[in-house]
Amino acid sequence: MSAQIRTERKAYYDLLETTQKGDLDITTWLLWFIACLDRAFDGAETILASVMRKARFWKALEGHPLNERQRKVINRLLDGFEGKLTNSKWAALAKTSPDTALRDINDLVSRGILAKEPSGGRSTNYSLGV
Image 1 (cartoon, rainbow, N blue to C red):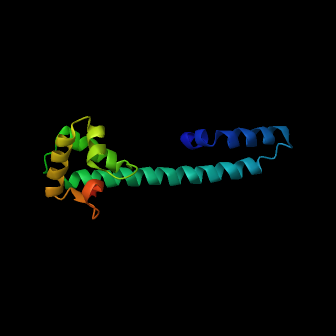
Image 2 (image 1 turned 90 degrees about the vertical axis):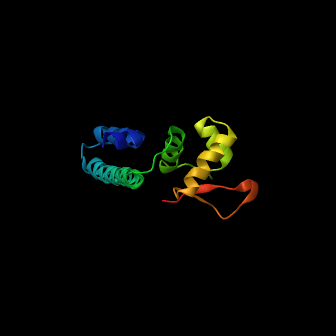
Image 3 (image 1 turned 120 degrees about the vertical axis):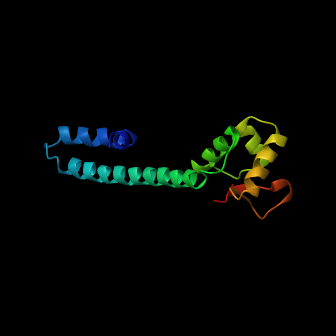
């Protein structure tokens, strides 16, 4: 709840000030607070769903050994990587050479952990296959 209030602090303080300087009727503030609590529940639910999805993903890969670079980039994908994952982006994220990035990617594609998107050539990109 405190994180949600921090996100909406301007509205919180504006409404609080209006309530204190008005006729001291707190109905409007209570309605805002309850709505804020509802938004906090929605946010917590979204975060929990993301954590559970990530946990299920790693549970499914329990028997698959991955190197540290692969773990790092996969976690980035699971956390909501923006854009398309390409070989050059993998190399930048993992701080490695394009050749090493391609080896990591090909290893994951061969095991079905990553899937190659239909567009090919220089614009080849990948997504999670599991």
